[in-house]
Length: 380
Image (tube, rainbow, N blue to C red; front, top):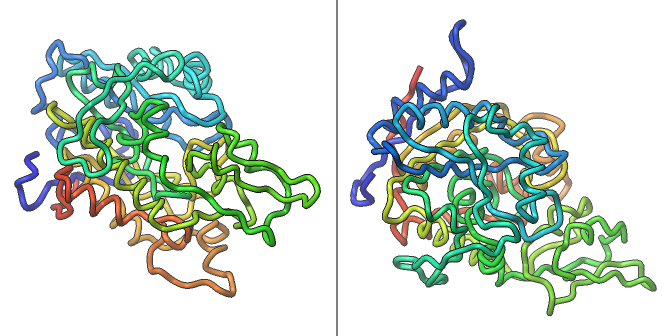
């Protein structure tokens, strides 16, 4: 796909399957129709970037989807591997050993997925390379996992869902944040700092368990949480951990700058080599798969989409989601039923009122990551 094109093509299919096929078979048909075969993969190393899910989470994409992509890549002569980079917060994916055990426990093995798993930034999340960002305004050199950049071909396989800070987790986030090493993730999160509303804080300390950087301090006398601003890196994990809306970002610019940095990191990953992108819209949980649990989906399952253009793909996914009716008994409808609810006419904005995603899409277009206009082609 050339960014000079005025309209990009995005292919879509729903989850309805013929009697003789399942979703994996239909995904193969979708990506073949979208032109994945035009990429020369013969003898090439092919990185397939996806999220293996945090232990306890059940909304992540299952290995069946990965295997459909892997089988297609192998048929084209490629040498595929699944990859993701380590996290900078506590959990089961903060180093390569625990990350691999997490992936295995969640069903990702060479047998189930059809290829090896390589953690992109090495054992401790320090194996990265500095990649220049063409046209970068916030990031001049992105710190990307070495294995990701060593690949000849890059493919993203994304579970499209909500997110407590960036509105939704789509293709750009999967690539930009996901391929950043631990230092790269900190680089993207470096601007924003949270604030805590003491009147709403219940002193439950759940947010503290999510902080990997000593950014939160509990005031024993007041029984309230406070922010240690010298240590806080602004990752936003505490926001998703709070059930009482006590934590917010001090300024909208913090989230907006994160969005812009994330788009620039994504551009660093895909620039200068063949790339292809897939998003699966199902189990659209209100917050990220990085959590050890997940809330009920906010909308019905929609379908699978593919494109050579990551920005057009995110736009198409958002549009498809906004056409759906909210599911009852979810975080989205809980927000809508609050007395002070202000309807933003956007499922993601309404689900996480402190989040914002439009800056990311606008900046991605500005720096030439892709097109915002797209043609949707339906595959039956």
